[in-house]
Length: 505
Image: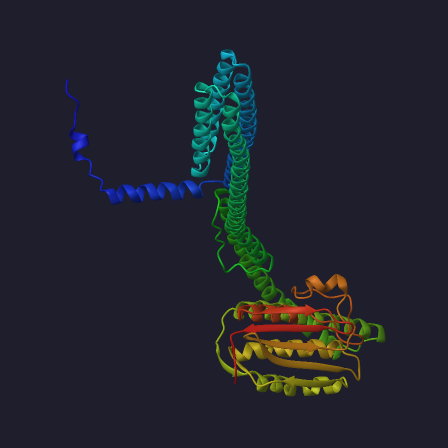
């Protein structure tokens, strides 16, 4: 049977570029498929490999230097031993030669020959350790002098005393050559010691550069991995912050390791769920508010008819009950209208009609429009503004300024002062509103911009507000891409709003 090759022949042929792209996708998917813990472990292992390689190289360098040092020590000891041995053999040769000339004993001449042969073996060992031309010249001269002494011993003649006279300068020369060889060996040992020290210094510099490079590379790898691994955490933190601020318009996208991407998908599901719940809540509040307005209007109308005596005269107690009924129904209706206004403004705050606006004039107009309000409470309003412009929604920003001013006037004591300052810095417009009221309690700082939240420090003698003014401020400022903050101050309250994309007027 033959294998069926029809399926193989029908498969499309893959080009090298397709294979490369597939391999690249595999590598990318494999990296993205790692978890945060696995990526962190890989980073530690890579840094450990870099530092371990540097440590291994350091060990090899130290071992090499140590071997050189040991070899230099062994050579120095061998040189010293051989030079001393050569001096001893020279003394033995001289003693044997002189005894032979005096006693005429052939055994003494043989002893000279044995000492000479031992000295030549020592010279060969020294020649192996001292390869310098000067040392080789000394060895040749030494061999010539030893040979001259041997010639005298072979043909001493009858005048033994004359032979001793010829022998003395030969051995004097040999002793001088031994001293020269000793000095030469010391120079050789010094040069080798200097070479070892130079090699040690060179290896030390190389090792220092290697360790420094390894440390720098490890730090760069740590920073790179830290940035790559911590950036998704920053995205997660920013996404949680947006969800906490009820900003559900921006999708949550988290890149990086697989487990963080799964967390990003869960946050995106949570964002969609919270956005749906917020929409349902807004729709429910709007519907129930509309449903309450009709019966509340009927209650107020009935209380007004009773107060006007349409159903007959009222006793004083009945009139008091009708007054209480009318006042509370009116307050309840205002709360319902504020609730409807907040949801309408919150929805409209995201729809901006930007245009270049001269902000100093806008601020002065808002202050002038509320003149009757702050004059009625005997509050002084001071404006400190520099000319600047920005592309904003003028109507909505005017609402922001009006709410800040009304809030400051409401909490300011009679005779107090409110400062409104406007300036441009770092490409942003900064507007500060500072009053001399009781300030914001420490417990209320985190929630002062929340809708319908009533702080603990309320203005004396003023009608209790609905708690939506500052929340409208936050909604509109955030729609402009800015930020609203409550700054710490020793007295009163200090609110600041910052709006980007400012241009000089």
